[in-house]
Amino acid sequence: MTDRQREITLRFLAEPADVNFGGKVHGGAVMKWIDLAAYACAAGWSGKYCITAYAGGIRFVKPIQVGSLVEVSAKVIYTGRTSMHLGIDVRAGDPKHQQRQLTTHCVVIMVAVDDHGQPTQVPEWIPESQEDIALRDSAIRLMEMRKKITSEMEAHIKQ
Image (cartoon, rainbow, N blue to C red; front, side, top):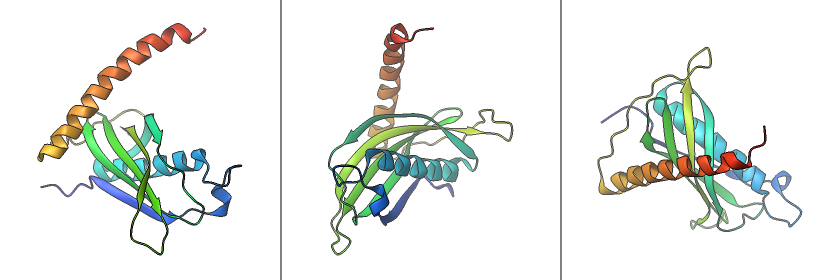
């Protein structure tokens, strides 16, 4: 058992300032919330300042209504030498009811850095349950897919 914080959930109300032209919460606001939860989780696990290296596979499943109670949950699902892969779920619903529905899901990679901004080692996370092993294995498969996508994308980058 560890005293490291592996997961965190941020809870707050979606405000009118978060609205888009369609009257729902703006996707950019959701992405900001995801980044905040990812940072809090990664810093809690590593005990260090962390920066976002990657946010991908963002799936906007359902819109969020202004006034909804929003829960952004982040969980370490894989650790590298200096990086942490985090599974992020955003759920929202009427604050007068207990039920929250999944609205957004993604994976974020955070890197711990030292006082000079250089990557620094993070504690290893070792999965114990079958669910955690499946999450780790999924993170590894996604990492391999990202390498292939990066290679393909290089043809689109103009120097």
